[in-house]
Length: 268
Image (cartoon, rainbow, N blue to C red; front, side, top):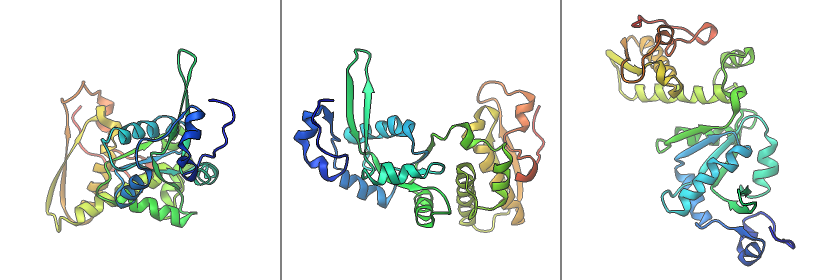
């Protein structure tokens, strides 16, 4: 980056294109205001974890798609741990960030990333932000939810996560519980719209697709339907991937301890 850089990282100063060029910074090649209006109407990509990894990778890839005209909407991001990021980085810079990439030839590629349409604090302690995130999550146009929250954010083993689950969807504070509760509500809304179901066969993938969260979705559907008096059978789809070990055959649809458990006769 060249010396004498006098502009600030904000929407207003992006209009001073020559100053950015003089500083060696590449500006977004799409209409930011149009993208943000489209995203507010219907977000297709939500992300949780608003830190450096997100800004340097997922947000940058979304900008590539926007600049190529392959998408019209940006990302809505929620932060569930370091809320100061939202105030001191996103809000102060109009959801913009400066990405500097050091290349193998020792040059630096610097660009303004503007693919983040909205940034919120993901916690019931901030009700306006939390309700906004839930509205985006429940919009049927949503296609993908991604995370950069490390194992501390998505593990269900720690006691504080188990305790958080028991607090219920309106009072939980961890990302894993909040997103799982939203998934549960979406599954139940989907099934409720189908009326009074009498018999249902749930078909889910085996352990080789454990991280798709299909087991949790199947679990939610099972408990909801059984509570409504529906006769439910679960068929695990085996043989479509690499061989599944015996222990894995029981794992996908089991939720141990206080999370709530149901056991089914799996093939071993």
